[in-house]
Image (cartoon, rainbow, N blue to C red; front, side):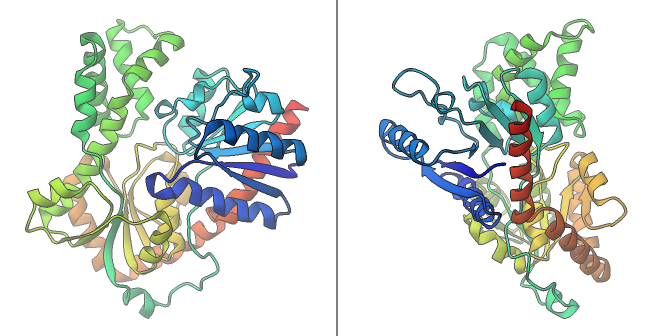
Length: 403
């Protein structure tokens, strides 16, 4: 049984969303009668390690939980990995593609990864033999799951028709970095981008494998070399993620579709389309988004190249009673099935998105019904309560496997 969990928090980054999730799950762990102690990895490293060691000596822990824990695989004074020295299994919840994180190459012997995309979990199992287990678990949404659903009248009195809560890192930043790669590697990265653009339904790693197969005369590349190439060209993945997000929003701005956007990095697009009907509200903390979605009829989602999972924005919007329009994948099709609890668009047809938005907003009955069906599914599937239970179950399963 998991009786006590150590939660590791990092400094305030990316709207402090990682710590917001950890805090929320910690609350649920306590409600489930699992002890929790949080440690903030800010300040001087040696002092942080001493704090961890003292707490472990006094209380003992059954598991360590962190999110995107780059920089937290530390050595104690005797040169051993800190978590190996303490004998505590380490669970790292990665909210991005594994290629984006150095922590996955950690020297910890009892290291476990949790992924937000089924393909990511499969990628870890195949390419990182140092990882003892890799599980798939979508992130929970934020918001009050006990709030009564809106009546039809209150839903249509919501302030915003269409909302996006997402920032943008200019795609050119990643492209510039790719252009500084050695010539052969640069050519592979650019071919990878072209393949992802022309095959938007494929997981990114499958696109890269196809590119390398063509370069190798139809032969499969060995896993060790594949991982080295993928790691060297990771900025192609980052570029494509930003490029898709920019394309979707640019299509809406160019068409004059009214939209409210929270997030940084849109200045260039805003200047390019001065007569758009977009309202840019600036940045918003993760903890502010539930209130935004409670005032939204239709929330726009742009998945970060997830081809086997969902996104917390979808869950948060639906918990808040908003209908959601997102790019689809096989996981979402299976999840929602015939319930019609979500609206979908195709990444390869971004110019059609403005018309899709217009159709959805004009069909008021279907908009309201979809919002209600989506809210019911999100509350029962992606609440913090449910996710905390599943996290403990993953930890317990790993503990039994070791036993």
